[in-house]
Image (cartoon, rainbow, N blue to C red):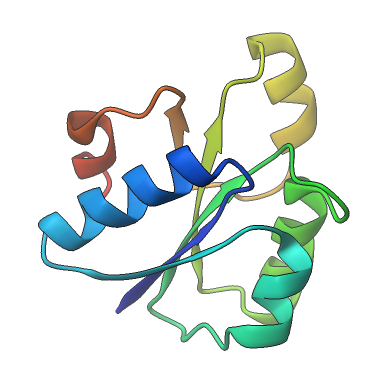
Length: 112
């Protein structure tokens, strides 16, 4: 199982990768949806941590695309959005877990 972090904020992406690796997991970061789609081939047991506010293709659009082609992939939304915007953006996406920014290790560990 691998973890794919799709997050445009380099500090947040680095922190997530470092935490996941500290927990003993393989993790790779991508700065946008397009670079993830070009480089990664997620497996059926992989977990994707996706920021909703990505440049280019939105995180919600990436999740829709992934759920269509790889329905078994676990998706965790990482966001700093307001609750009202968040509910609108993730409705019907099949998101398994939500982690709020700033990300804390305990919140991340909850879904591992």
